[in-house]
Length: 108
Image (cartoon, rainbow, N blue to C red; front, side, top):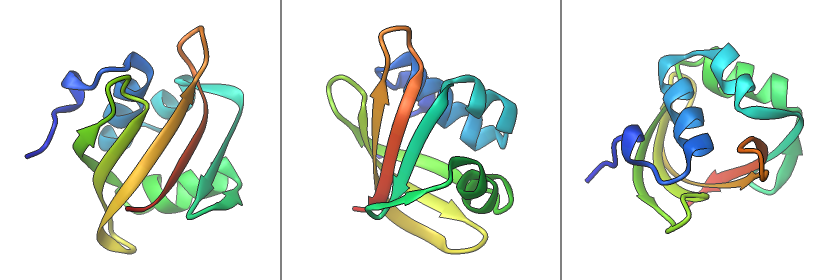
């Protein structure tokens, strides 16, 4: 069963997932801190390059399967035109002012 983005517990994570699914680069970066970082399968990645390649340039889409009580950890059926569909885990670090300062993703 998929959790609708509107039902995600954390507002910043909700905005991130909604923006990814809309292909809205501006909205994704609006919810991130200016110095946000990320990793993919444990390897640090350049945020701009990674999002361009894995999300915006490849029609990335997140179908959320489950979330932690605080909404900062998700299990997602992630798909894009490069890799197809895969079950992934996402963990978000959210600042006190409601921005995402880091996210980590990888196969679940």
